[in-house]
Image 1: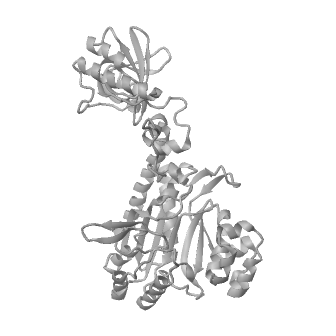
Image 2: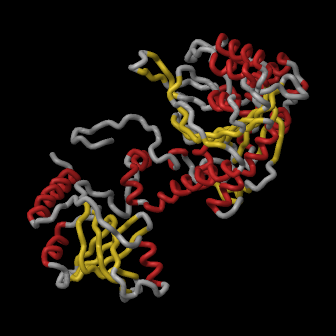
Image 3: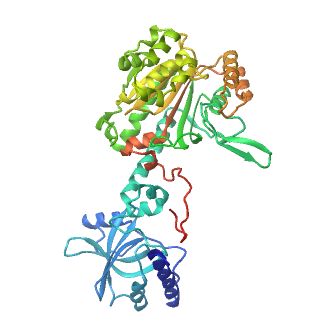
Length: 512
């Protein structure tokens, strides 16, 4: 038995034939509009456009027939405008065409503005054109897509019925533009790096595999642009950045998507202190441009923190990972040996720690640095609400960073945190070619059995051997930045087409 939607689609398909029988093409090639809905309404209320003829175009969102006349609402990207049809004054064929219109169709309308008795700025239509006949009905106006999954899977319908949600994506786009503007003004050059790579590197992550038919080679999707950007610095570009997609074949949750967007930049003759200054000033510039203020409210409905006013204006708090671990866990890891720290970790009573951070049976083989990181992740991260730089990480956390100037157990690395999330990563970049080769060879040799094997990147090592100047590097996540800007709970709310499980087709062919 056909569903209600199937019957509506058949009815609409039949209307296409009826439209063509009137000598009207339901899918014309173009339409020249003169005003947006928002500009026409605001301008008219300000005393402009009083007697001029105007042309608007958009999607028909409602249609109310009153016999000899009709009212409708037309939506374009700027908003909605009411239009009025006087059937008697319309060309006869266009008066008849009104009966064949449906909610969701695109029309172009020409006329003059007037104010209704309810003081609604309205376009009095003297002629109009059907621009596109929609064969599938939109979701019901007041209820829309109630299933949370469907608003991501049926993004087009969601954006049409919830036009206010488009503002989130406009803010995201504006943030990226502001980021580019800031970096360009600082003398950085935007570059592109490969997304398909023979050797993946620049981060610890499981990659996606692909295959290049012409080369008959297995390749990988990029997990990070870092290696290529540092090769460019070694090649003479002193300040470079890229805004690109990264692909990590790992978990999906409310702040992780396997395909995500990052900005990475590298500055010659700089260190991680310079990158901290760059980060806080860049964030302040973006928020001021997008929101008009460095202060904003963010609320996670599932967090005990609740709604918080966050201020990204510099300077941000700086705290070492060891200091943070001691402050929130009471464990003074900096004064303990690996064996002493391992015993303290095994004394932790929270079962959740050993579920989320490390299985109890794995503690025995963890290094001192890995134990410090585990304590920090569990006890500290959720407490870092206001912008905070967590600096001086254990050296085990990455092979691409310089050893700390004062403590050989640590490296000159920082991660910025806001509302308990890590929003970026930065180093004083390692440029000692002998040490770099040793660390990458050791990393490759020590990969566990469940990791995708990776070769040592000889092209990268060759560049470091040619010579890399002292360099500061920074990576910032665009998606989490957009979540903060738009007070969005899920990363899926700021990615137009997030990764979802493959849709299943029902018996009638609709997507579930």
